[in-house]
Amino acid sequence: MMPGMLSLMAALLITVLSDGDEPPPSAGDWLDEARGVAAELSARFPRSAEVLVAIAGVEQRSGSLLAALDRFQEALRLDPKLTEARESLGDILSALGKLSEAAEEYRAALLAGGDRLDRARWARKRGHALLVSGRLAEAEAALREAAAADPQDAATRSDLARALIALGRPREALGALDEAQRFGERDPSIEYSRAQVHFSLGDAAAGQEALARYRAARERPIDGKEFRARRDRDREGLDRRSAALAHLDAARIYRRSGSRDDARRHLEAALRWDRGFSTARYLLAQLAAEMGDLDRATAEYETLITAAADPGALKKAAAALYERRVRALLGEPAAARGRVPEILGWARRAVELDPSGSAHEAAAWASLAAGDRSSALTHLREAVRLDPSNVETLRRLRTIEKAREER
Image (cartoon, rainbow, N blue to C red; front, side, top):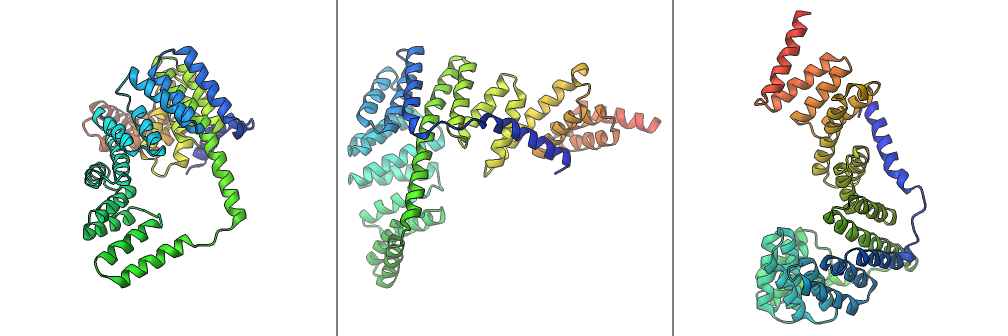
């Protein structure tokens, strides 16, 4: 990366990290914080199904399952198509051991619609509830529906294998177990299921080997001090995320109502509680861009890119914002005066993030503003190569080339 890019990245990261200079709130205060958010929403949006779902979520995360159950049911009376409430109601019923009722809630969510991954999750949860309650044929059907919607979900394949074992179809179960492990299933119980299959097929040696792997995984010694430290870290992380989720719910409700300032306030609060909460940071980046705060938006995207395992879409979004910043300032010569090196840095970062035709165009105009015709020509030629149908860019390229020849 060029030195200018390193300076730009450092400045952007400082912009984001400066929001966290103050110590984060105490994780132990999360429930008071979340209930305060719930009270604010109730006062601002009385008799709102979305607000009832948000309040129910606070109760559910606090362990008050019956209170949450009542709130979710009240929300569904106001709006029966709220799939988030359906799913959460199913989760609570499952936790309470009411598996047949839970399966019906997941079924209702499926009937209401949703995207592919949502439907895969609801079908998997329905299949699991049916499996545990002994409704094996229905469980198989639901789990196959989930597998079709999300073919690489390991938990779905693992549950499908258990259903097939119980239905007396060990060879099919073995295939499902192989797929579960290929897709990343690490639960030791999968080896127990594999042992059952091998014994059913008469392969005692393979069954004993699978049982040995299962026992070895279950009997692995645990360092008590390390376990307690990890448990405490996990508990604090869950508490922080619970407070952040309350703020995220509020931000979404405010954003849908058109109250951008309130939405932003809650997203920033979510990140104070949980700085690693990528969903809140992504929504804040989008919202800041909508509000015209391109400095904050690009800074948030840069932070997301740094942490993401697959940042492709984030890079495109960030590149588009850098292009927008370049074009906006170059369109106002008075504002651009004295900032050309900064503008050039934005343009180069856009090309680095997403070397598309439009990014190269922005870099060309920034290069011209910096008096670098050679770089401008390079970027315009690349823009034309990537998009030969762009007549305007081709015309500008030929104009610059002709002016250069005449010099």
